[in-house]
Image: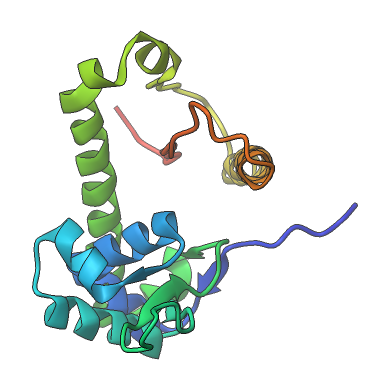
Length: 197
């Protein structure tokens, strides 16, 4: 079976701490969707000064999350950025939270991720009518309560990742073939975690 690229797993706490700043997370996510962008373009989207955005992009570059995309401007003065890997990144709490500093960083980054995902979903809910019936009928929100072991939850995570990878590949192939009619960015958020009622 062919090996599929996986998201990079962060094992160095100093790299994870780069995302304790919510603006950096927002910039990374916007850049991931855009493919390439300048600090000025991103600054408009986050309502911040281009110099501040440029500073945070350089910090993300220091930690290997973004890189310069090469000269795309006519005069070469604009600096274009892109994410380093389209596979993204992830982390295991158990590998980073063994110290108070690590536990704090993992907690902050996890909450920044949840907050940014929730804000994205709230924005969709606020704009739902503008998307029209076709999109609102296709959109979904679901919750399942399952009885699983840690190994089964891990297996389910792998299956969901493979499914998402298949759909991402399909969308990219369609765009590359010029099939862009009706195609939008779609965000899928799934969480799987233990709980006790």
